[in-house]
Length: 115
Length: 110
Image (cartoon, rainbow over all chains, first blue to last red; front, side, top):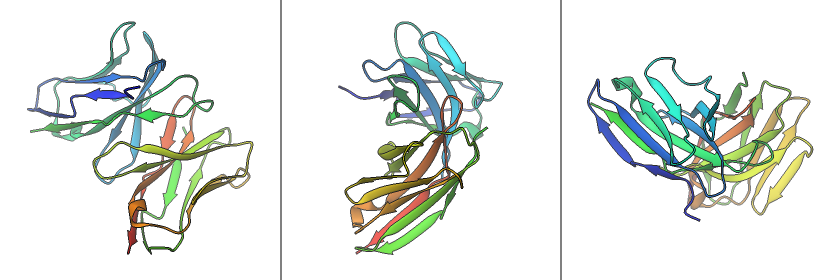
């Protein structure tokens, strides 16, 4: 089992460009969660998705950020027109079922740097 | 939403001593409380978790206690080793996802 796969591991973007972060959950996991981690900070929840559905996006900024988890392929976190404040580590996690009955497995993260 | 407070933010202990990290949560409906360890530049990894139907759980040198009435839970590491040095995060289940504390940076000195 390859675990939760995120790519790229490191991503550098200039201000105003788009960033696309990919997450392939563990085999058999249909629940995906995205978190942002700033230096010296905890993990901030962004969005929770199941296949083809956004279940909770209460932690996602209303503008420039979007997420999807299509029927086929990885989950994508998309940040349009990036700004310096978007620089952070973005982690995704997956679980096989409802949280509480199951815990999370995290991916290795994508470290986004906006220059 | 759920609010998780974690203390202390940094903790330094000598090898062989015990370390205790404490968290409080706000949502009395929370029923799942995991702890994650994150080494520098790596992913958070689950080290132990507890559900609201038990008050204590132990796994070798690591134990977690939960007080639902007071809405707090704690991580206890005994006989600490240098490889225990990392950032530790507590979390509590919210409506759909985990809400994390800000982390405790634990340093174990030989």
